[in-house]
Image (cartoon, rainbow, N blue to C red; front, side, top):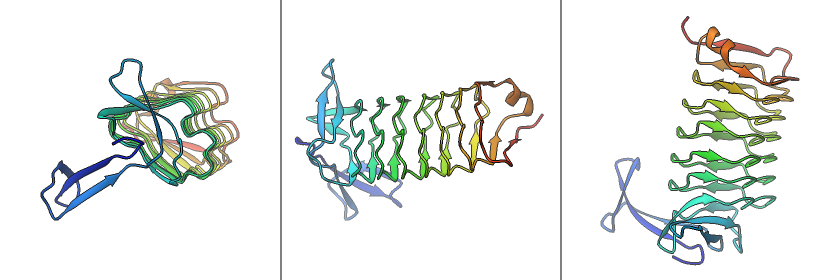
Length: 238
């Protein structure tokens, strides 16, 4: 603990699907968080946020779940913004908020592991991450804010949570490698320009009915300049 270094000893159960705190096992994992990351105490002094890359040099970044014996619950504003060194980031389960521009223009970032407890991703969070190829958004997320994945030109695979209700303005604008995306049946709003200039996007698979699709509020030019064979498939039963 301290200086961004955090060691957790856990015991693997079964095939590693479940872990328990333990020092008794021949199947013990040691999780070492990246050293040199900068953490800052929140105003209420009950938790930390990851403030910046600090003096770290790792390209595969592991964020500590605790720092100075308190939980890490946020990734700060522009914490990794414009960093062209990091390749992957693992965010621990206690983090609920990824702030504005947290990973903006991280042009080498190919992989991001998001925690199950994440409930908010700020605007511009992954804007311009041109090497990011896939992302799975956790179930607790109900909204994708504006510009979150804009110009992620290598993004091919996106998995959205069942509880998602709103996709904000420009959220996937310019994701030119995206060919298909599945939208949940609880979706109520697609903002302006959400899929504009997704030039390879051929299909949206909507898990609801045609009637439910028609009821979704759609902003201006939400699907402007997509693939010429673009179509929408509704899988729900009428």
